[in-house]
Image 1: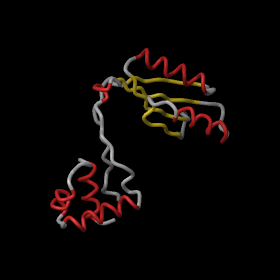
Image 2: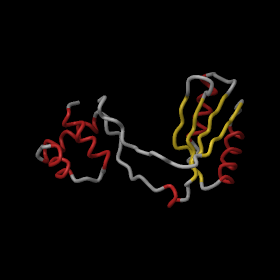
Image 3: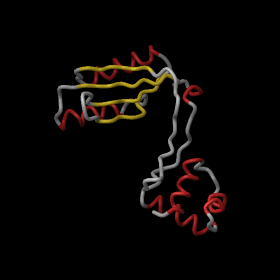
Length: 152
């Protein structure tokens, strides 16, 4: 990956609907070589997909909850069952296995506390957990989907 690829990726992260001609102009290429580079980045799975980013409040999921989970179960079978349960829950936006005192971290979006309580009850009905702790985000100070490209 060279500087031109990084600049193409920066354009696409800014606006995935940007016309190839505009991307090409910004990075100093003609349209055809620019398009070929984009296709190569897609084939190599550097570009995993193109999506529309929605306003959570306008689709009634304006409450973000960070859920930390500890468990006494650490078998591969338990993790497989837990991951399947979490994947089936559309409220879960991100799901991580952690190091340290917390075993797993989820980022969940819901309309309100009642909806979170229903989510929580569905979660504990599906899988045995030792400890679940929830923190409600009061204010979103920074949010981006753009990855830093300086390291690419």
